[in-house]
View (tube, rainbow, N blue to C red):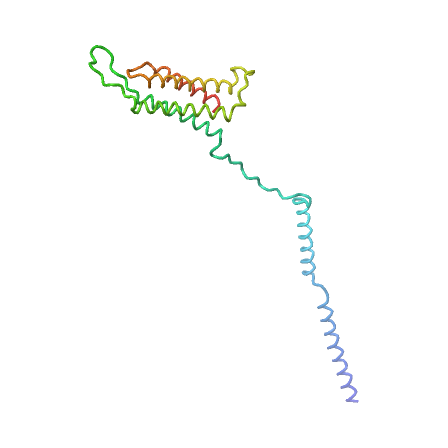
Amino acid sequence: MKGIKLMWGGALCLAAFSGTAWAQDQAAELPLLSSEYVKDYESFKLAANETDVLVKRPENTSPVLKQPEFESPMFTGTKMHQYLGLATVGAAAATFLTHFHPCEGPNCGPQPPRKTHGAHANLGRATAILAAATVATGLLYHWDDFHAEDGVSDPDNLHVILGATGAALMAYAINKSARSTVPTSHAAMAELGALSMVVAIKLTW
């Protein structure tokens, strides 16, 4: 009788132990509430990201490339014409500043011979060369900007007329002075030519 009780007790212990193990296995297989929340959150993030991609970056939209800013070259025919025009005006100003006014009248006494190769004369020649180069580059690179039918009110036409006239006046004044061994009245004509070129530059600057 005692042996039967021991057998039943051992069987009950085994059954209880087996039930506990089975319950633990089932609990391990059951998804935790926290894991389900994490999975739902990850799915929500993926869905949100996909929506963001569809809204902000559609598949058919090609990437926009930033266009480089256009930089004009430093030396072109047009810019060379501008540089020569400014250099002409600068040389004319330097020529004016180096002009020597001889003494006139009975109280002056004997005057030294006129310098034909001094700073004033050399600057005058340089001004004439620069003026001729300015006109030449203007004709070469801007010949199609002049239209006679537009009249003198057109800025381009007036630029051409004043620029060419100013260069011609300065060249005439310089040539007149260079050929004379005595002082000549050429300053007014040269200054008028320089002023004409300044106005021509201002019209298209």
